[in-house]
View (cartoon, rainbow, N blue to C red):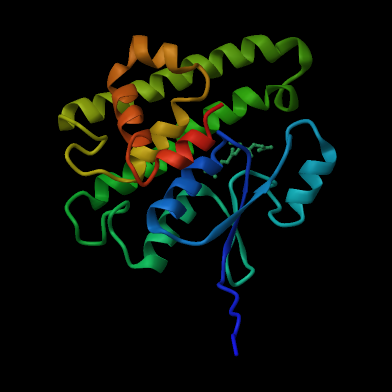
Length: 217
Ligand SMILES: N[C@@H](CCC(=O)N[C@@H](CS)C(=O)NCC(=O)O)C(=O)O
């Protein structure tokens, strides 16, 4: 007699190349079982937005449904949670590890400073009157460039090859995904080439290559 068991799986609401790739890369790196749910154009398609909102009231990608059925928003929360639930420290330095404070600091910087600047630029039509969209977007984009510069300076100070020096972390995954976004790889290559070197090295890692290929856009 054969018995069938259903392995508890994660469900990641995603779109190729979006912030969900940051979380998908971590699920893959940890070897966790997951399924992908396509969120669709949540910026412009009211039905797609409503479907995601039923799971996560902020209607954002990434949204991660845990095997328990609980849904999480916020990539940084997922980053910390997945390290905790796996008991692993290969992407997130453990409490007491020397790189932990810097990791936490730059993780929060990534999601509270750089990421929202991209979001505010993308969602400009929702945030300011139509006549102000272009000017507002240009200012947000300039500000985002300065924030990226701060991160690149920190990485340079630490001497590479990763954001935190010789310690590979989930921060490098954020860089690999987010440097594919506006203002685009050509801008990063010209202005902050060290971040492109990090991004390319991340995407070439054997355990991550398939995720980055699938999320290329
Ligand atoms: N703080 C969130 C930001 C997520 C976010 O802004 N996601 C974008 C797509 S990459 C999104 O869902 N935008 C649609 C919206 O906010 O309406 C995180 O780190 O997960």
